[in-house]
Length: 117
Length: 110
Image 1 (cartoon, one colour):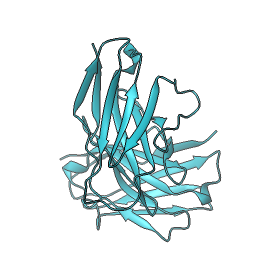
Image 2 (cartoon, rainbow over the protein chains, first blue to last red):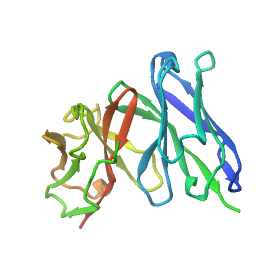
Image 3 (cartoon, rainbow over the protein chains, first blue to last red):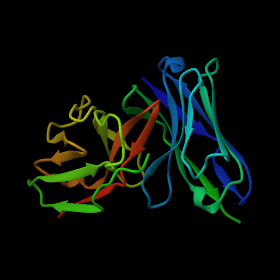
């Protein structure tokens, strides 16, 4: 069974940094694209960052580009999201997501990031 | 890629049907052939209900169906049940390992 487990969320002050991790199991991690999808309190879903199986393609939400970096370690079945210069509006639950080429099939339980002074 | 447009809310009575639309901007180019739909209850993880426009994952009731015409995809829920109440999001593959979500629709079962 595919499983994604996020960690690293918490409370951080504006301007601070945080690194999220997502540990994957139950599938061949190295052949799947990985994504971080976030959801601010009471708001909709948005894709914060995406990375291809071999890390040659990355993509970011315009509002996080230049501040967030997605990376992966296929030897550890883990994907990361390094977040810096955090803003109040980055407060959200961050989900680790994967799936087929054309749809999201598996989601983690999410980790809450709160940016507040 | 701009977000896909969905109605903010829809409602229906038990046993009746509702349809939720999902429209992509006319300026978007490329395929709109890979639309999926997610159901989300408050505080829960989104659940895949439809993929590839009209396919249902195992375990999803056949009351849920998907379709597409031009730049608008639709999710129809027939025989509404109380447990269908929640938020629904469409999602489209945008090329190169990227996806874009719809704005989300809150379904109320009256």
